[in-house]
Image (cartoon, rainbow, N blue to C red; front, side, top):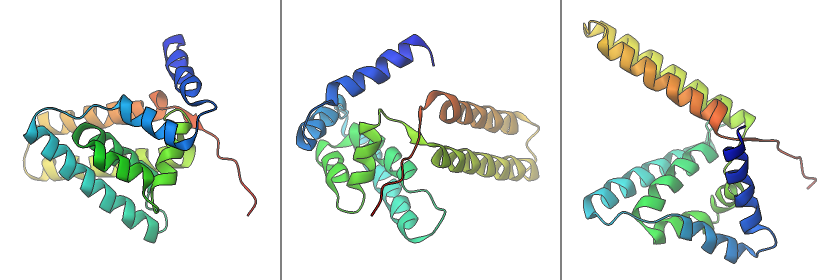
Length: 169
């Protein structure tokens, strides 16, 4: 981790240290400013809703990621609607997981990173196979592979990894 990354991560810790959950929530909401463009806000909102549905599926289907979809939904709601972002962070079903993600300095546990990288790999491989079957001479496959590699690099090396601590019931 570079010094600028360490500084940005530690500043997140310093800003929330010793604060109540409501103060942390307000701090997180203040970090995200919705777009001024109505169409852009609408698109981000629709994507956020789709990601929340995917996260809900993850609460029912074992192995399907939940936090990863919530992070994506939070990203979208942070750019579309302060009200929806607040709802997501305080939701009975999802709020705690997403709030813990922010409290941990926007880090993901290793198992989530592995699942995300696996999904990127599988979807990219299927996309490359489909584009090849459709007769693309190689430009589409190259683009898909490059985007997949950038996504894998980002999740694998740029997003910090947290160690989960088992809590007794």
